[in-house]
Length: 134
Image 1 (cartoon, rainbow, N blue to C red):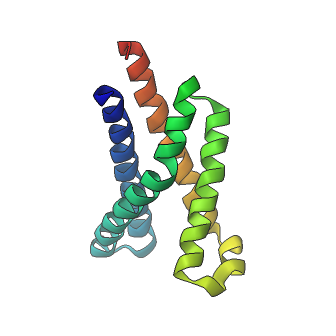
Image 2 (cartoon, one colour; image 1 turned 60 degrees about the vertical axis):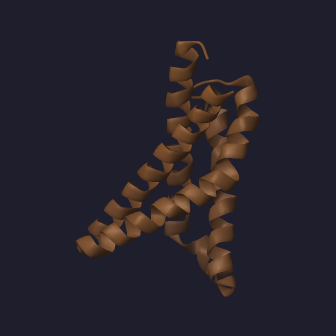
């Protein structure tokens, strides 16, 4: 049981780190300021850790009952959950911005990136786990 929990934590940590680095890089490209990029990366890492922990890890535990690596259906499920989580995040921050959120390319980019990152790490770590026989 401890070994399986370590795989969940590894997926959570690596996904959060990757998400933070991706948004930090995006911020650096958009604004050209390293301080803003580092701050964005740190905030995105924390955001990713909390949101992945609340939404993706329980879903991952549910999906792991019939674990398959690089399953496109899992990617679609993670994408739907990521769209819901990002929407809730945007609406909680600015309740009057529902229309803006749905029109924003950043909302879609953030949701798809979050889903792909988690799906990729989940599949890679699951592949490693099944190869080791756990």
